[in-house]
Length: 25
Image 1 (cartoon, rainbow, N blue to C red):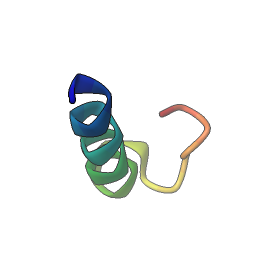
Image 2: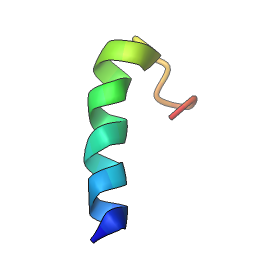
Image 3: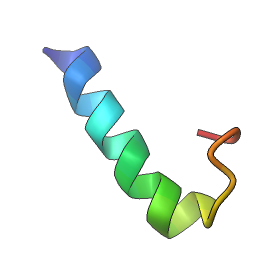
Image 4: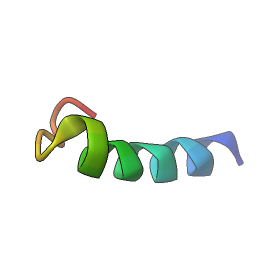
């Protein structure tokens, strides 16, 4: 279940922190 949480967090970071740099996530 942790993998799922990480996947959702990564998607959220993609929009906020990554700013389009999905490769960084």
